[in-house]
Amino acid sequence: MTDLIRKGKGQPLRAAMERSGLTQAQLAAKTKAVDIRGKGVSLGTVIKVTGRGKTAAEECRFRTAWLITTALGEPLQDHFDMPSVSTDTVERCNPHGDSDPR
Image 1 (cartoon, rainbow, N blue to C red):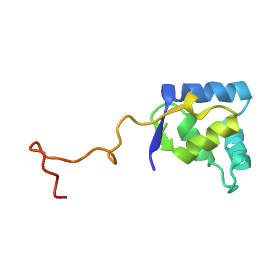
Image 2: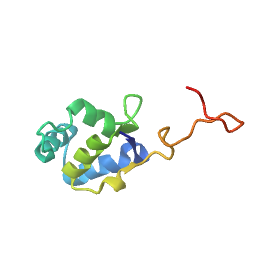
Image 3: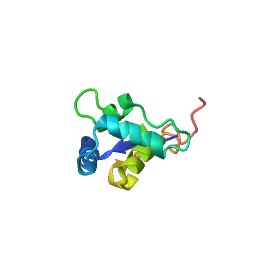
């Protein structure tokens, strides 16, 4: 599955958390409430997705992004972008147009 890219280095997510009055731990707990499986997103993953600096993750799985934004009550597209190019859709060819034998 394609990973999503967080917008603005996570600033829109942090702003939404502030508007909602949620800490990272509270957001992680709230993702469990909106998850039909009841698992939610771990606190460690919430910290990576909403955080800053070297330990922050610029990409996350679609399901993770969906659970976080649903728990925040915000539209997914306000906080995450799709990658511009997927290797799944790029044809591998050599310069002469022949397909790669891999």
